Each structure stands twice: as structure tokens, then as C-alpha cells.
Amino acid sequence: MPNLTDTMLRSAEPGKVLWDNALKGFGVRVGKTRKTFIVLIESGRRKSIGHYPDMTLAEARREAKRTLAEKTLGQVRPVHTAF
Image (cartoon, rainbow, N blue to C red; front, side, top):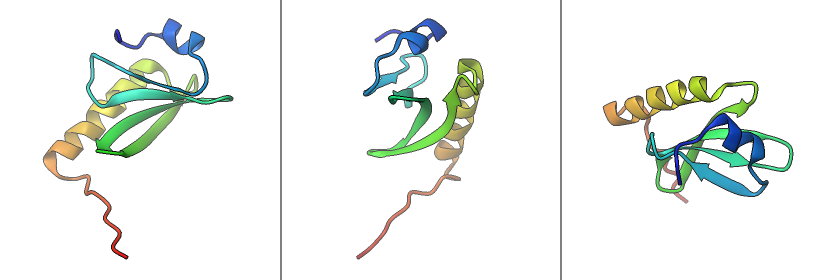
């Protein structure tokens, strides 16, 4: 899959998750009524960072880079729930 673009976001079909090749762990989840930018925090754990078109693709990439940097530095802790 190529890098995400505004054209791809506008024409995306509901029910899909589109991942960006330029920034590993960044993508957009396409629902019936909204498109949500997401960042992969750990395996199976995603963080929502905003909605398209309220947040532009460039703003979402900046926020994703900041979130991924915090993850690398250990500031984003995995949530573990013991039963």
C-alpha cells in the first residue's frame, strides 16, 4: 500500500483500515460515518488521535510521530489488566 493521501482518504470504503507506508504504525480506520486517525501503540492496542477532515493528514502525521516518539522513550505505558 502506498503512502496515505487526501485523495485516498476521501475515496476510502467503510470497514477498512488503511496503513501508511511512510510512517510505520500510523493509519486511518474508515467507518460508515467517520474516518479516524490511529496509531499502533503495541500489538493489538491502537490510540485514536483525531478525525478526518477535522484534523488534516499533515496534522495527524505530526501527532502520530509525537506519540510514537513518546512510546520509544517509554512515556506511553502499556495497560495491563489482571483478572
